[in-house]
Every structure is written in C-alpha cells, then in structure tokens.
Length: 145
Image (cartoon, rainbow, N blue to C red; front, top):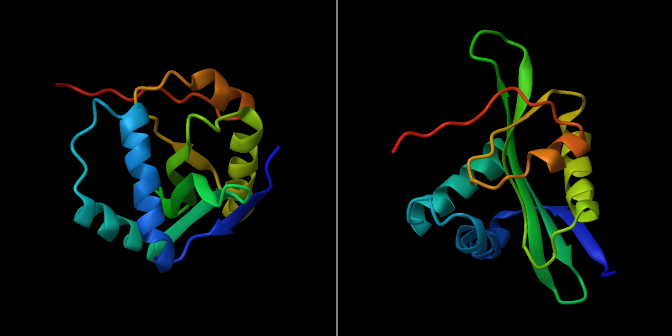
C-alpha cells in the first residue's frame, strides 16, 4: 500500500484541487452542469476561508487522490451547529473503504462531535458505504428536470 499524506489545503493547492474535482466531474458527474472554473476557484477560496478542505495525497506518485470539503453551519431553525460535508471524493482507481475511512476520520476529528450532514447528489448509489461508516439515512435528494 502506498504512503499517504492527509493535510489541510492552502491557497497554493487550488490548481490541484480543481484538477481533482474535474476528474470527479468526468468520473461521476455526467448529469451535472458544465464546470465554470473561475466560479469553482472562487468557491474553493470561500471553503478555505470559512470551512476546511482536507487533501489525501499518495506520496509514491506525488498525486492528490482524494479530498473532503466541508464547513460549519447551523440549522435554519436553531443556533446549534453542525457540519455540512459538501464533497468527499477519492479517485476511482484508488477508491477503497480504508481510504474513505481515513478521510472521514479526519473530518470527524475536526468536527469535534458536531453532527455531520452529507447530501449525495452525484447519482452514485453509495448508501451502503455511508451506512457502514455510521451515517444514518435521513431521506433522499430529489431533482426535477
């Protein structure tokens, strides 16, 4: 197994994060709209300023192979805080449960016991994997058109 580095992204990592997320779009997001790279860059800067981007790098090939993007929020009806996990992604050729667990454990550590919410809108049928990690199903995501 490869040597891995898990670390918090910085501004200098944005070009590599964009490349990784464009790979996600190619692999899993055929139904998603066309990526606007300037908007994506702006969004990533916002996440860096208001949330966290955790990168997973394979040191043997010196390549970022996964990421998690999240931010702290509150419920619309309460002052209680929660974590909105915007993206958790590992490149298809590297994807396995162990790497997903490593990435998710880093999110849990940063979340400090706050509830973590994840909305899956990629169309991937991945519910059993998230249940295995410990997520509870709270419904579904629906899209019209």
